[in-house]
Amino acid sequence: MRLFDTMTREVRELAPRDGKTFRFYCCGPTVYGPAHIGNFRTFVLQDVFRRSLELSGQATFHVRNLTDVDDKTIRDSQASGRTLKEFTDHWRDRFHHDCDQLNLLRPHLEPSAVEHIPHQIAMIAELIEKGHAYASADGSVYYRVASFEGYGRLSRLDQRELKEGASGAVADDEYDKDSVSDFALWKARRDEDGDNWWDSPWGQGRPGWHLECSAMCREYLGDSFDLHSGGVDLVFPHHENEIAQSEACTGHVMADHWFHLTHLLVDGGKMSKSLGNFYTLDQLAKAGFSPAELRYVLISAHYRQPLNFVAKDADGNETFPALLGARQALQRLAKFDAALAARSGDPDIPPYEALLTVKEGGSFQSAFESLQNDLNTPEALGRVFTAIKAVKVDALSPDEAASERMGLHRVLAALGLLLPATAGEETAEAPAEIAALAEARRAAKAAKDWPEADRLRNEISALGWEVKDTKEGYELCPKN
RNA sequence: GGCGAGGUCGCCAAGUGGUAAGGCCGGGCUCUGCAAAAGCCCUAUCGCGGGUUCGAUUCCCGCCCUCGCCUCCA
Image 1 (cartoon, rainbow, N blue to C red):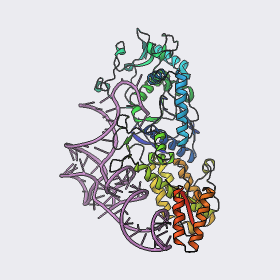
Image 2 (tube, rainbow, N blue to C red; image 1 turned 120 degrees about the vertical axis):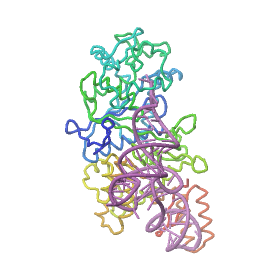
Image 3 (cartoon, rainbow, N blue to C red; image 1 turned 135 degrees about the horizontal axis):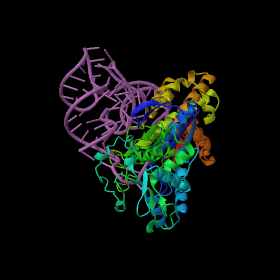
Image 4 (tube, helix red, strand yellow; image 1 turned 180 degrees about the vertical axis):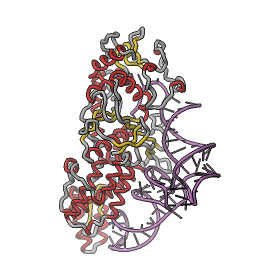
């Protein structure tokens, strides 16, 4: 697979260092509230990345952390009257639930920051010993940015050109840093942290944010590994700082490849609670949309382009046209798949494991290859639909249909798209009462008793179902 | 001010130095007791101005506009 690398700013071929398993790290969520659809754009694309590697025959080892000790988790846990653990466990579980809904593969390892404080302390000690960090009078420890020659290489940010305090976030407790660019490795205990402090050689306190990833990467992936990923906002300062910490410590290149995901926009602008365009999976579910529909929208733009999630229609009403479009598109895919399944004589969907052995995707090969070329998900989707139009299902032999279906499902598996039930499947699941009414209507139609047939259709409709006549008979589907 | 991304059909969104995928919506047709559904078909010269070139939407320069980041936000 070829993928753009933030460090070199070019598309490069990926290859595992050890020649066998591709080992990568993704910066995970801070568990202090529900993740929003922007967060999920990142996690979904990372998931497509992993699936595409695996389905192309590349074994992977995927580590994604949980940030469960930082300013926000401590602050909000206290505000809620719960312990930090109770609080972060709750939001972690919610995150897992949402991830499952979105059909994200679980990482092979999901280390949490609070469980790796000894590793972080050890790393701080090593950095101090090597002259890259210093303790301040209040018991905090800072990284001396000037001590690391390569600082700024990833983000290409010349320190001298940093607009000082541009974010207005320079904390008042930073007066004892040697330089404004220096960042905290260890933060001295403060009253407002409550019970959330740990002992260290520099006194009681807690670790700084950037350090957890460096420590856990080193613990589980070693001094050097294949790829590191996160949202674009993490390029600076988070990943820049991780590199400074890790490489100053180990003397080795931290990661061979940097994979960054561009942000999601909502109706052309940044998502924010104050604008009321801040969406969670839960909210979309309440509006009647499935996780698969959201997933489809999230992969509909290339990961290095801003994706504009259209929530409001032309009249300014929050009707989610993007999700409605995704629903239609998924329904078409499902219809096509159902036709292939019927033709092949095998209704079962091929399991992920079986798809790993597919070497040639038939009509869907080029769509799969789009993913191997810098994870071009929109092109892959386009090629899937082009192929669907070209494949004449009725002209295929059962074997050919089965073969094409494997190719189709390999791409769908790489994209992580689960198909919705088709009308035919829903007919089979309709309650007996509805089915009986539909049968009665069929009889009325056969007798050309149109008033009775229409009356039955209305009755079915009143019960929440819709009858659609087909060549063979009829289909039933729940009304939206 | 610095760094970065981008302006392609009504909306979303790929792509290419030789006259632009796909999805949604819309329109037409077929099917149909009606309706719905389904199937098929149709719709753009790529922000503006220069330049390079036989030829640019695709390369270069300038301009306009949008968006993101600039120390703890995916």
